Length: 122
Image 1: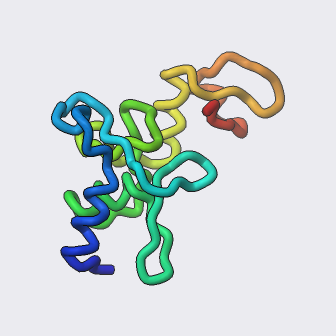
Image 2: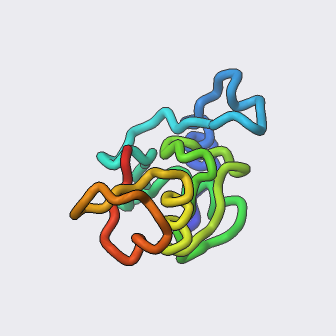
Image 3: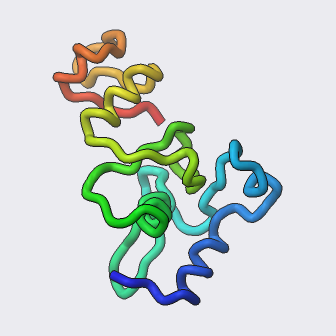
């Protein structure tokens, strides 16, 4: 779906326009609406779009993979903080960073335990 330039510009304006955006290393936070899971979102022609995934696809082209955050900030849209990954790679990244716990027991987050069902700690 091609989004007209004037709408794209409004989307870009929804990213934090404060000092943080001037630094490549800082998170550029989405200031529009959020999904209940904490990711930035917007609607276009009746479709809900996730902000960081839209930014990635706008710059790099369409993907069927997850768009993951190196910074673990769900509102961040800084392209230098985003990377493509499978669900497995995303969960491995979470485990390496200690951001997951088992739904059955509080087992230590290890890559081996990823075969079980995991939930993100927000």
